[in-house]
Length: 181
Image 1: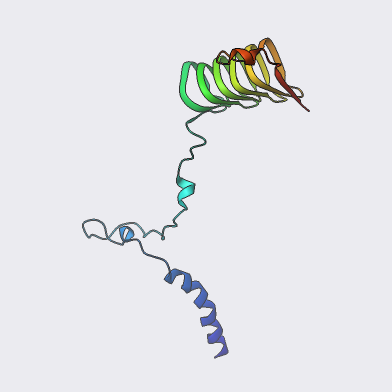
Image 2 (image 1 turned 135 degrees about the vertical axis):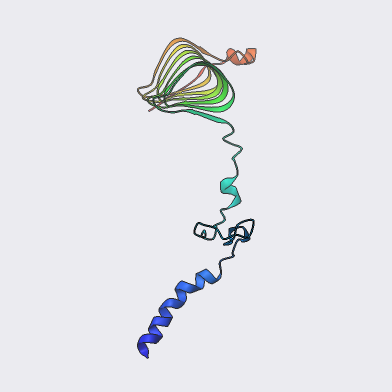
């Protein structure tokens, strides 16, 4: 008797969770016409929180050019964030550009924030903040609002504080230059 009592006590917890599952009528064993389905019935669905599946407003539209991809001769518009892991040769007006360590951008860009871990070559106007990391290299005609260069980062070319959209009194201010160490 003691053996069968233990057996039933062990089975009880395994069966209990299945009793609380709410069956989904769409997953019944019959198809639309009442005929039995040919595949095995599906397990009960797990409902994810609404926040996890809703698109975030912060990220907006994002274009990622992956490693070993070359995007050439395009104009990129209406893109909130461009992530460059490969090679891009383009003209763009965006909110954020992120160039990875092995990524490269060649062309013209007008953006709010630039995070450069790789290479940028061309005309770059950064309305707010240009960040060049240790592995980053920026060459060409560069205009910026704020500048942060990590130790090892490179910046060469025609470099000017202030953007075309800045007010006249801002261009007379001392440039904001921060050297990260």
